[in-house]
Amino acid sequence: MPLASEAKTTSEIIASLDQADIRRGPRVEVSAEQLLSPVTSDAQIFAQGLNYVAHASEAQHANRKSNLIFSKASSALTGPYGDIIRPSEVQLLDYEVEIGLVLRKNLGEGQEVTDKTIGEAVAGVVLCNDVSARDTMFGATFLQWYRGKSYRTFCPTGPALWLLEPEEVQDTLQNLEIKLWVNGELRQSANSRQLIWKPAETLSYIASSIDMRCGDLLLTGTPGGVTAPATPRLVDILKNHLLADDRRRDELRIEMSTGRPFLQPGDLVTATLADSRGLTLGGLANQIVEAHQKR
Image (tube, rainbow, N blue to C red; front, side):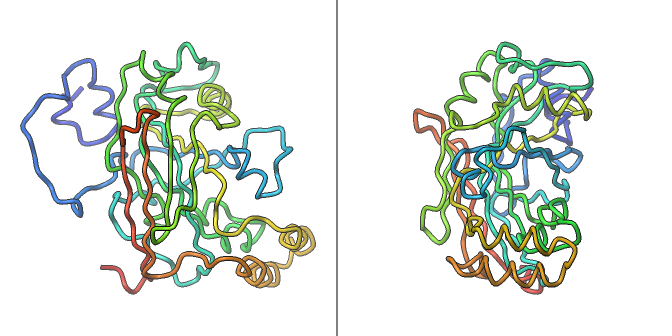
């Protein structure tokens, strides 16, 4: 097993925690633009949907009774200050600030995580933006959440992975605050105490059917304040045109564009993660660019 200073992936760093003191070492200065995601691309990315009451309500799903789990390609990972590239076929580009949890160990069939053992399962927290192409998610054949959330650069992450001692995890996860701004306008704000399905029960739920590995990332859901809440008209479009892809996509684009504009080239999306004492644990700043404008 490599020492922390020799590790090349997030999972190797976490696995080496007991073998080396990673807090010690030579000081290295890097520019912000050089920072990469602290979660490396070998990780699986799991995500929760509609996990805050305000977001579930604006999506017309306030009364649902099950935990919504989906995945996101690890190739979507990008640095905390890198550009978010809007694909040419995407018009409805949206943001979703989230608290990310990085696993300390593998979790598989029959393994239960409780509030008492959550520190054995979670190594740390990291700030993420679950960027989403709404027209791909809801307009492609039979809906395409995976593709709509997995374009390259659609998961700004960092700038730091906040590693925790096992005994710190449970308390920390109950006292985290996230905020997101677009061009300086506050759009999202929430506290982790507002999560509907908590981390322990969610990790147990995922592990009951899917193997999770050390270093994997769980996005715990976004609060209310996304660009276009679901309207009754939008719900009708989804129900009435499920098998008519082009019509559904075109009508969704019209309906979802009646409110404030979706993210446009030149927009700056910023976000912060802090604990309840106000200690900042990370900040993102990502500019939207068209695919051909990549810098």
